[in-house]
Image 1 (tube, one colour):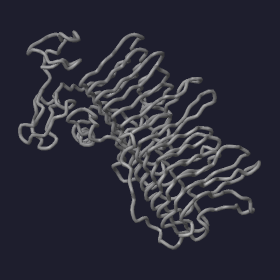
Image 2 (cartoon, one colour):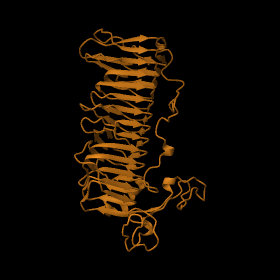
Image 3 (cartoon, one colour):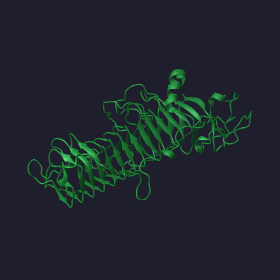
Image 4 (cartoon, one colour):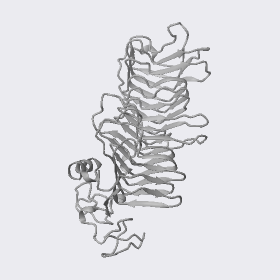
Length: 482
């Protein structure tokens, strides 16, 4: 038998847990409430401590090798965790039906957490130095309605010390956290079934730089992507993103900027596939994008106006329309753009508002560019002051086609907006077709760091639980937990 509180293995008939002291129920948890690990290759039942499946020899990952009890628990009583206290749930299937106020530490370990994203009336409120930790959890959004973007209510709200999420799976969740808090997310999987909306809305207190981070996570819409665009970004206020993978997501990341804060949005070694409006920053927010890859994406970086964009060592493959929109200052260096089509937008859109910021594109490869109508590679709109010229330096053009000039040198008023230095291949435009012959994809940085999430090393969620199947099971057979 196992402890109902911490999951420690106990002798048969034990009345108290020797590890945490919790009193055990008179009736032992039944076999159906035990999560048993199974081989991912042949579905054979496994036992604690096994390192290989006896049937097929598949190596067993440590995080999935130990069974533990799972009891259903509906939190119907108000809970107040005082400063300095810790409340821990281990191996529980939890439905939140009352408010939890946390000034201390709230821990969910190997838990299944179910909440109604359509109507959040019961919340976890962070106060003071309150913190929440999720480890090897499966969080399920029990949703039925079409989301509207932002909400007045989130599952976790308030002003606390931090939220830490590790090795967990979020299935079809929405409106999870909106708080003044530091957050760290690592080795997690986020799955959406059709609709996406705001999931994290993080703000750091005034005068404190927001260092909230997200590392080695996958974010994917596994359902049909709806035609209508969601009004809210999935991740808002997560300012450091590295080694992540986004697929079929609209409005992925929203970088937040506030006066008196030195916030920067830093995105590195990440992949975006079939995403629209991947990065939407606030005005004035500096953005750094390095060693990333965008495939089949459209309208990639939104306008930041007075903010500076640094875009380096990044690839764009089979993308469409704008790479970035309306920056007064941008430095693009050592990037490769393959098979890009500009149908109704310029690829790099600069603006001049009387600033002196640099506008430079250097050491880049443009292979397989196609421009329709009046659009070209760069444009610089002048809103006042002395025009500042966009400089293209040591760039290479191959297999490009355009109905007009590929590099727009003057605006409609005849004011010069761009210059080129040591660029090659401009004379071959409309002579080599508009498709790249060889696309060289970067899989890692020169230092050997993988670009994208390390899926092989990602062990997330409650062992043995498929959140999609579990939600269907609950809807059909066990609606009492909702």
